[in-house]
Image 1 (tube, rainbow, N blue to C red):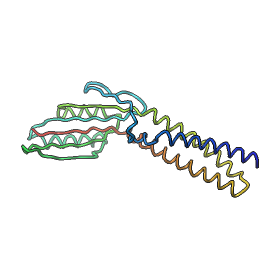
Image 2: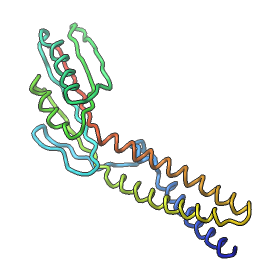
Image 3: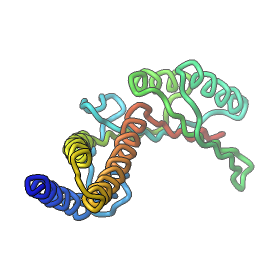
Image 4: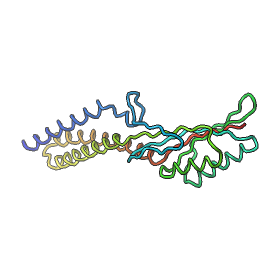
Length: 212
């Protein structure tokens, strides 16, 4: 029993240290919502390539001017192209200026491995007036999540073994309490990793098609 309590004490100390790291490490950074976070961002020219890495979030913003007679057909051609590349359109906005000329904004999400080719195909439909491309490297954040998940999984496994050997109800409740906190932290980290994986899997292009 003494050995059991000693092992439980050591694991509790280890868990508290891990929890302290997680709370002081501002986990909000994993969602990109913390103003103190600076991602490694690379801007490239329209003739360049995105930086390469295991976890790169790619985004692009472009505009193109078309004649009034080609306005609707350009929109249709771009939307068909999105379907052909197994992408989706997440946002659209149509506006008209004081001269009666229309402007159509759409945000397209394309599988990352096809993104550069997709952009070139869009420009074949209508040449870009301007384009901005960026790549955010979040690899180190994903690796940090993996490291913390591995540590928590090991602690969880050890606590589950202790729970099996616990002789008293009090000991079992203490172990169960620690397991509850560990499971909560694992759930949060898994959600953060899923967010990154989804962001990396699809890249976005926001295109402004302007009449006139």
